[in-house]
Amino acid sequence: MSNLRELYQEVILDHNDNPRNFGECVGANRHAKGDNPLCGDKYVVEAKVDDDDTLSEVCFHGDGCAISKAAASMMTQHVKGLPVDEAEALIEEFRGMLTGDIDPETDSENLDHLKVFKSVSTRPERIKCAVLAWHTLHAALEGKDSISTEGDEDPVEA
Amino acid sequence: MTVDTESRVGNAAQRSWKAIRADFPALDQEVGGSPLSYLDNAASSQSPQSVIDRMTAYQSGEHSNVHRGVHTLSRRATDAFEAAREKVAEFIGAPDPDCCVWTRGATEAINLVRYAWGRANIEAGDEILVTEMEHHSNIVPWQMLCEETGAQLRVLPMTDRGELKLDQLDGLLTDRTKLVGAVHVSNALGTINPVETIIEKAHDRGVPVLIDGCQATPHMDVDVEEMDADFYVFSGHKMNGPTGIGMLYARRDILEEMPPFHGGGEMIRSVTFEESTWADVPQKFEAGTPAILPAIGLGEAASYLTDIGMERIARREADLLEYATGKLEAIEGVRIFGRADRKASVLSFDVDGVHPHDIGTILDDEGVAIRAGHHCTQPVMDRLGIPATARASFAYYNTRVDADRLADAVETVKEIFGR
Figure 1: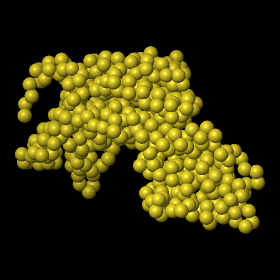
Figure 2 (figure 1 turned 90 degrees about the vertical axis):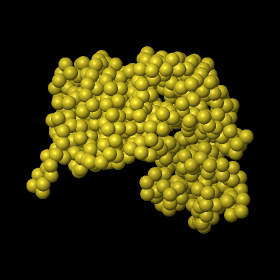
Figure 3 (figure 1 turned 45 degrees about the vertical axis):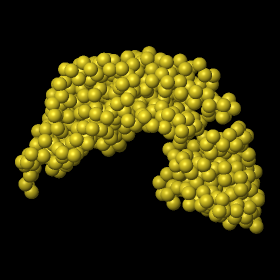
Figure 4 (figure 1 turned 120 degrees about the vertical axis):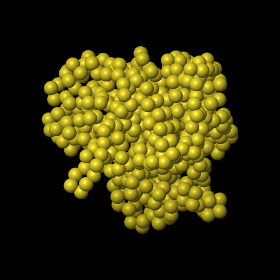
């Protein structure tokens, strides 16, 4: 049984059918639209950043494949409650794991259950699916209102 | 190197499909621990050993530049290059190899027509009519030309089954229509369009027609002269040749009137700083050193297909399509897109509750290679109200076992997703 099968079985059944923090955030003050034009995956990621720079709410809505939806759902679980700088660091680590720049077993203490996405790194054509929501949250935190996985904003080439 | 064509045709026409499949080294491999079932032929097809060997032989002992050397290798290269043009011209039923221009592929061929013919013939207020099931390559160049000239793009719609609404064609052909573009076989839905009828109706009003033959040349007998196409374009890699080569066929009088596309070497008769004059067709449209090696490979691919026989290939693929359609139809939750009466071996589908990209990834894990996405036909996806489809496309070298493995892998998708 391949790692990819494990990824699907472990996260798809759960997060694809019951995505967490799915819908619009009450009181959100950061919003961005993320678009993966190659796949047609489209999500809006919203967050509420408190005065002490903590992400007290993170949620998403939109449509896409199971990998993109599960990655978005698990992202909201992992970044909710984090200070913005720690959330940004986690976004970097998640992206690094998928592009192969970071070994989640030795180079990270924060990826935790997100390590299940490591198997996506063996499928270059699906990396952008997994990264999309994370890339969109990063854009929202930087004050951008939309982001694409292609062109100048390509998160894999960056 | 002479080959007895008679005996070759005789042998190939009798060879078993098993023996023919064994000609394709790429098919004999495992992917992820499973045997490969290559069902992405509409995107690109595999080459038989004879095509690979012909290219190796050329590059090993015949290569030089064409049309200019006074030495032996240049003569060999030119002979092989022009022999390939003749073979491919004959393959599509072109009346004269001089009407056949080498291009990088169908996309470049369409863009050649856009720049050379379009700029000279299309002006503000004119209309270009395309069908709703065109590949982006037969939409975008015309949109760009319309933008540039002030012409309008019009669309012949299709039904839910994926058949063109021909009853609307007469109304859409007006005095302003200057070109019709139509796909011979839809890459997204498999529909075989009645191009002869479209051409006849357009010609009744004096309108030339460009046919995109990318999915037709690998699967059926094509005769551009009989169908009376003004322009016919296709790509080599979809018909067992290499990438980087394709062709524009056009009526000779049209080619002779058209101004050149690219300027440079090979396409001129004489050059001074004051003015240059153009070579005869087809060289007028072939500036620079051409893709000699891929052209020779495509020539060999055309011979290979001809030896098996396009009618035999079409019958084989019709059988595979019918069998695979039956297998997928039997699976609950599978929807098939493209239900035209006349269809090539393209099977577009989805699985209830599963995104096509996830289908594609899981199938790949099982060794079944398909395409998932919009297939460069976003208007078709919009028309059907879906973001994408999974698409299995069969070639004659596929087997019923490939169709069985496709169906089994789709069951695995359902199992993983708990559907």
